[in-house]
Length: 322
Image (cartoon, rainbow, N blue to C red; front, top):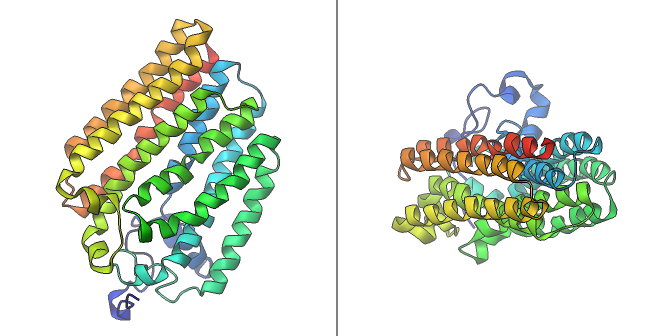
């Protein structure tokens, strides 16, 4: 069992890798801060990365048939649901990883290893977030509800994946991009091949950005025996990242072709493909600036994937209107 870090190595307040001046540290009432930090409310990048595949799915599914008034609620509810389920998932992750977190410099200031929240309190907080997320889920159709319930298995498994596989990022990708299937089903009440191609694109994208994220901790992970693609790939990481980059844009393009080509409408297809091309350029720019030996560079490039993922959204939405 990893030993906890000495108390004097932990920040008096806040979490070591949270952005300085974040709203939780600046404005949230002090008693709520440990719980909001458990949910990563001080680091919204994860909520964005969970939401973006949902937005892809809503826009692309709408481009197949039509935009419906329901889609506005679907987009808003997916945003709220992403915040809640990311918070619940991160809380569960911190409960499962509390001993590992105490042994890693970047994570030992998190609320549980820092002694700000007990495991029991964290479990109650996780349950509260899940109840609120369930209230949103049950406004959807039966297929989407079933998919939402099924996703809990992936959420439950992910924190333990690093203990038994070198590919925990695959499990994160499966869980984090499930919203692409759920949101498509909520709009269209079915799951055509395009939805699964979109899901696969999201998984490849997660392998890209989370391998970069994992490079921040590869030395600590090696000491405590935690597995990751960053450790597995080692000096070959850039080649693997390029592969994931190519898979992401190729599968996203395939999803668009599968969705729009049968309609025989070239203009929406071209507009949607422009968004994929623009996202590809952004990721290529990321790789040029990425230094895998510099944790600050890894974190900055990881966070840049919010912008990369949002780039196709207006193009897909425009294709839905055309």
